[in-house]
Length: 458
Image 1: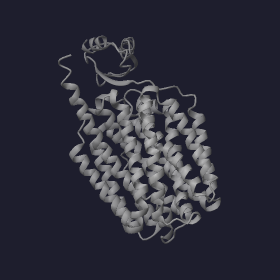
Image 2: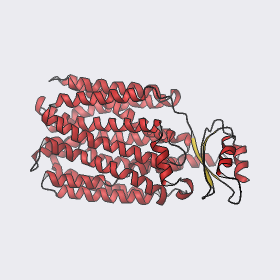
Image 3: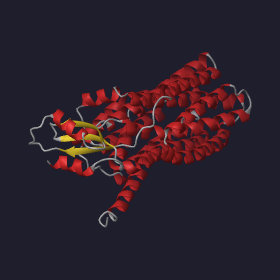
Image 4: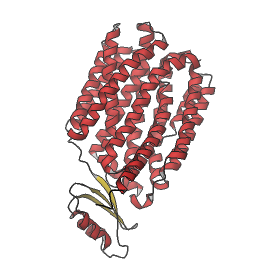
């Protein structure tokens, strides 16, 4: 007991520093992106060659390239470390922002947005957080990272219409570049290099992908984040134009509306995150999905009534921010041993595939079927999500361990797996004899630490 008391505060302080740094990187990068969301549908239509479909494509193509590169970035970070991949992704994002800022047509902006999207670091940032933060605090840290996205979303939607009116579309892209450069500085100065030898705690690539893609819980979570971001992007292909054309609001006035509904929704979310740590995520998540569907139905029926938009948008952002905070933590819990980076890579790919689908489908429906159809289709997708996850059980609070094995031991892989699974609290064991390790998923509350340590010392 005496030896543990000075150590634990240091661990907590280190976790706070890492969480703060990663949240800053997330927030600065996403703030730059979200600045475009409330204004691009209005400002982008003035670009030469612009159509509603191409505006939706310009919004969504970022997500397509994020989806294509999240898994490669996650796999490479498992092999070569998290920080080098974070640096590479931020540099690509800066380059894409500058290309879009210099573009003179909608097609040039689309190219710049694609290059921005190729810097796919979301899964790497979340994997680094999971690497260096203890299981005891991991749910809260993942919620903080999700909330940092929500917080940047709040600020960007409030400031975006004001800054867009002053700086124009090119100015916003320059600001994106500056914010990504700030993220590079934070990564260099504040983010530690995890003291983990990545090749020692990873399965071969093919086994990792097979275990992740064959996990039904992870597949449901991946489908959920795809739907969530598809709906978000589709809504913002439509909402700025409705506020401007149907309600007669100047773009700068959009900020006042977003300020009220976003702040109220964000504050309403916080007590439920704290409650979920005591009561579990599942019931609150299911309720949030239903609230999201309700908000989209209200948007479809809003007509010309401002109060109707206010109510619908409050419910939308309340549910969105809550779900955005929950889902990464659930992926971390559900990921099989030795696959965390890969699991988060596929999860992030689905997230940004949703951005692409939302922009493209939203633009097509806006041009050919009208805004109400965008909201009805989005509501249908959310209902499908609810039906896919309603039978899911609460995920247990588990931890991942790496156990070193005696390289000279002659026991085969099957025998080692049986011995490890016989230890109380060990729920999953994957032996990688070539590296002399076992990858474990354990229940910390019931784990027989002494027996596990004895096996590792044999």
